[in-house]
Length: 86
Image (cartoon, rainbow, N blue to C red; front, side, top):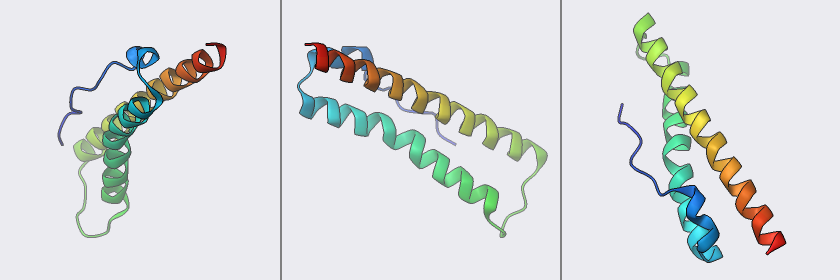
C-alpha cells in the first residue's frame, strides 16, 4: 500500500483562480477515493482470505483516507465561503 503523495496546501486556494482550484481539488480527491475503492474491493473480494493484520491495515488506511477527504471538504467549504464574501 503506497502512502499518499505530497499534496498542495488547500489553504492556498484563496489565491488561485477557480480553474486551478478545481485542478487541485481533483488532485486531492483522487488518491483517497481510489484507495477507498481498492481497499473496499479487497474487503469484499472472495478470492484472497485476509489475516487480522490485513484487516487492521485496511481499516487504518481507510480511516486515513476518510480523514483526508474530510479535511479537503473543510478547505473547499472555506474557499466557497470566501468566494461568496469576496
